[in-house]
Length: 330
Ligand SMILES: Nc1ncnc2c1ncn2[C@@H]1O[C@H](COP(=O)(O)OP(=O)(O)O)[C@@H](O)[C@H]1O
Ligand SMILES: [Mg+2]
Image 1 (cartoon, rainbow, N blue to C red):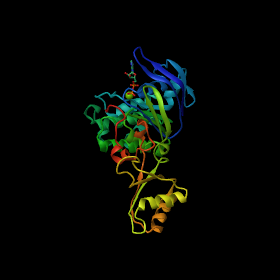
Image 2: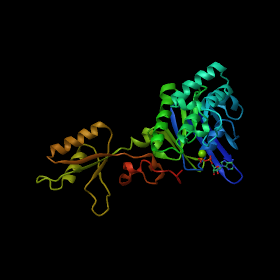
Image 3: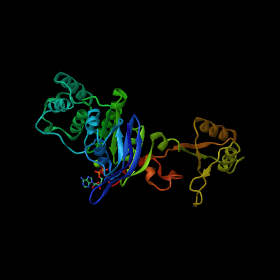
Image 4: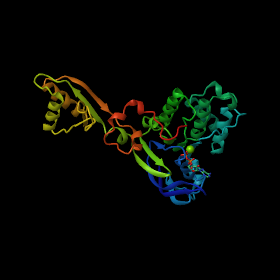
């Protein structure tokens, strides 16, 4: 869908993109980075609206330097900032945008009605946009990006300004843009946690540089750590050690949570390869006649990309980290 090669954008005082090379395939991709990371700049360059200082990029196989108009025919764009005329209705505005994209009048009206319904705007669509809530405005912005049935859409911070319920609704809509219509999505956010559930793939940039690009499951699931805690018994006064040895005999190595710290050693951590690991732990504990106090997933989160040591961050990987902001907030 998108391929950039050593793409740079320098403004007089700041380098917004710094030799960024990244490939983005079909599906829903999150472009994540703190405020000022270069997300909006990248989108404008990919649309051919702003020239790159150096490097090159292709969108749907088209060259950003020479084929910007052709790119914009096939790509929808939801800009970050408010850009809606207050004195026209959503219907009038979206029909206008559809006509600008080349749809004939009848098709433009039909597509507008369908698209506004899809984003959840009904009777309100005949009222002037100036009286809309932030959530409704974001929906109009999304609708105009979709109305000409693009192959790909760029959504720049679509959840900005929304409350938690509005956020979840918008993320659900974005997911359906791909699942219902097969449109690929590049969606930006300065919040990591929210895109984890919505995207198939996440690209993280910082200071205009690529920090990481991988599938969401790679971010979160392949590093699943299992934490287990067992009781002691008369036969096994140190139940933890007994389980550790029994698992080791079966080729599963464990380590103690907080190894080296005072009071450490009660909870064992191991890397779960899959379902079999859960069954194995259960069987080993049962065979030893011990009680299983806990067996829980210590799921790693995308936010840990920003911590330097991701090998043993079990303490901080609870759900409370989920919504953590990447940067300096909204
Ligand atoms: N037109 C511009 N002129 C000068 N600097 C700009 C311009 N647009 C963006 N920048 C700078 O480029 C950097 C990246 O901005 P931007 O792409 O908007 O980041 P993001 O969308 O990730 O918040 C920021 O430091 C910003 O101040
Ligand atoms: Mg931005």
